[in-house]
Amino acid sequence: MNEVIPEAIQTEIAEQSMPIAGYDWVDFTPSDLETIPEQSGVYVFYDITDRPVYFGKSIKNVRTRVKHHKTRF
Image (cartoon, rainbow, N blue to C red):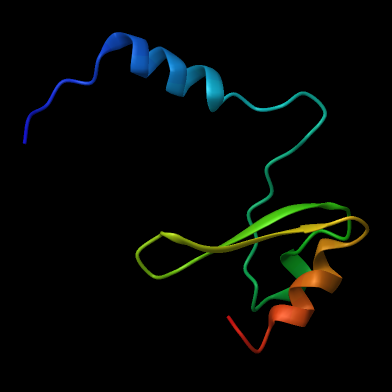
């Protein structure tokens, strides 16, 4: 399919995908606890096709929260 995305939609996507000031994107591997931040934040787990399958929020420590999910993912 060679559909054209309307310019208004492209602009909206660009605006909504801009980083939020004061927040950083951190990529981590759930199986390697050393790569997981020890700060508060939101995290997303993806399946092998890069679809999001779970998201969560940690008020204090993302690493601790991800440890609780280790047997699931």
